[in-house]
Image 1 (cartoon, rainbow, N blue to C red):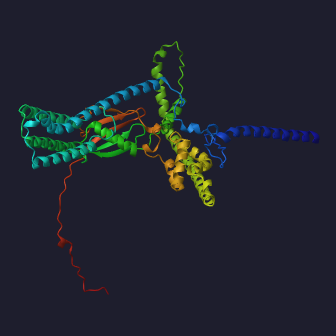
Image 2 (tube, rainbow, N blue to C red; image 1 turned 60 degrees about the vertical axis):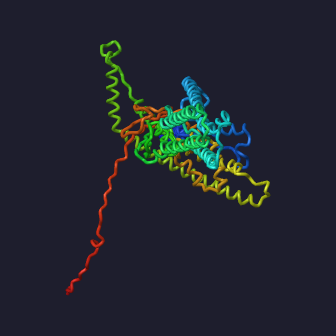
Image 3 (cartoon, rainbow, N blue to C red; image 1 turned 30 degrees about the vertical axis):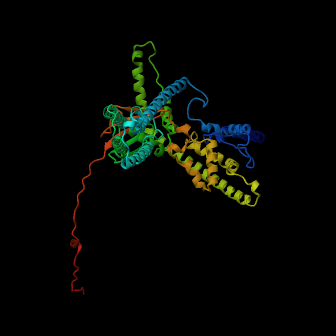
Length: 527
């Protein structure tokens, strides 16, 4: 009896121990992948020793990039490789090349017309003065002191006009607009008509009659130069001064993330206003990050992925004709039931994301501060060395970068900024901060918050072409309630216009004596 009880007890404990051992194995097997995937991202290990330059050899650098998975951070969030080309990409590249060729031809054609008109304007007064000496020199009267003084006046006025035209018109073009600039075309036509009319009068009254009064001819050329100077003043008023006074308030909204800015503009056409808005956009708007928009789409897809619709009547029934309608109603009803609990999931997802961002940020700040502290120690040691052994900022950046690369990479992946910063750009920024003796906070400011669009590489923000979509003509001026759209490949900018209201101010006079008062104290006191 005792033997059986002992045996049974031994079998119980041994079975329990075997069960616990199997349970432990299962738990270890279950926890093994969780230790790797609990952070839902790949771990990064940089094997470069601090004493060796990170970019010393191209082959070694390629192996390190592959080991650290840093190449994934330079790839946009798309379904293709960064070296692959789809049919749509080829069509878009071909269209961009055709558009660029058309824009270049139009730009050179406009420049050629401007040069021809400028030469006509500046050579006309000189031709007025030289033609009488070449055609009928023996009939001309002698030029006195007053006539010679007019020569000096014409020379200096032409020099002033040349400098003024160069400063106003011959500037590098900022953009290629879809339509011609109306005021500039109007001024060009006005100058052309003005010069042609002067040539007609000169041909009829001076060339045909061979006028002998050379002083009158010189005064005629001086009047032409004076008129050209006044036309240039008109050009300054129409092209530069007219748009300075703010008349409209425009609201610019990015279509993907709703980022919004407000600007005050003057009397501009729609295409000129679009150009001013794009110039403000590259400086004021944060860089467009499509990776931040994928979270909401994946969340909606995840909610709809668990919905299934079954046809219990079979495919041969008459009810199969309305299957599509019934499925849509079932999907809508299921989505409505899930909508009541989706806000809780969104709340906890955002809270978890904020916690991870704060955690990654704290690790990154500590790593960068330690790296900069190491730089200070290296600088103190290098002051004791010979001048030939001192490291340049580029080598110093390569030496300390591995100590902060892992924390920085994890933070950029958590905040969806990995496609905006490459390893080379980070090292260049680090070398720039070391050269100018900047603090760790100054180095981290470019990565802790998204900066303006121009801060990043041109490959990430430069749009080959913007398309202006407007119901009104793009050469017409802005009006109250005008709406137009600036569209590029990834997003669009929706612009709404409001006129600044007329402000009526009145003055109210306050008599200084009205502020005076008399303080009278009672003689009675409380007992």
